[in-house]
Length: 253
Image (cartoon, rainbow, N blue to C red; front, side, top):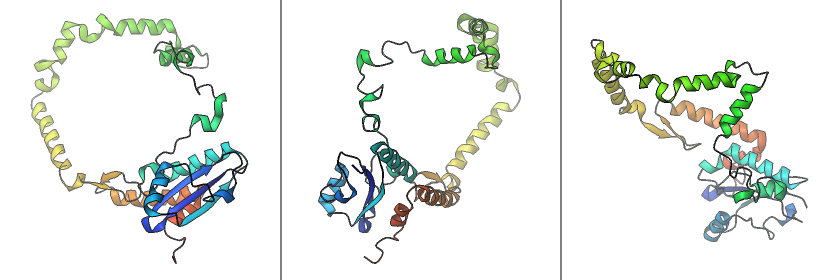
């Protein structure tokens, strides 16, 4: 068995697919002979546009776990899920394929699941354990102090439950009504902000590299950064993939 990652491409349609093969007995020589990927998106595209022009073995591995991790790293750095020119629809690792049935969470359902029947207080329990840690410098690590603080500030003891305080900060008694001109100034600020958002300053444009939208004053600077990050990140993983995307490969065809 020789797991490997591969690149399939249709340059004339600007469509690509980056995948991994790690089945028992697999070998780089079986790419498209007869192995044609397990992706239904690739099979559908092949049915409509024919076999890929680019069929490249990108990297070989000694075990399937390394191959899966490498594929995941490349797909995330290439941001394939957000880019329509990729046929890859996910960049996630599956628990079964990466760890097998030895993973503690795999195949555990219902009462067998590790969190079944536990109350929804896992976060608070973890916080209490951090408080009880002698290395924690948090003054709230004493549970008695925490209990007193909660009792003092919750339920009927909450400050807004006191009529005099509630009357002071609500309705016409709020400070903004008491301070001359404060309410009109605040309303004018909101009006000017909404007006500016409707202008060209807040017009949203899509980045041609990551397809995210930015304001018209940010888009040029973002596109320069986005292209530089894309080149750098792919260069650190699979540089030839980026070369294919920009047209260096099969330029004569």
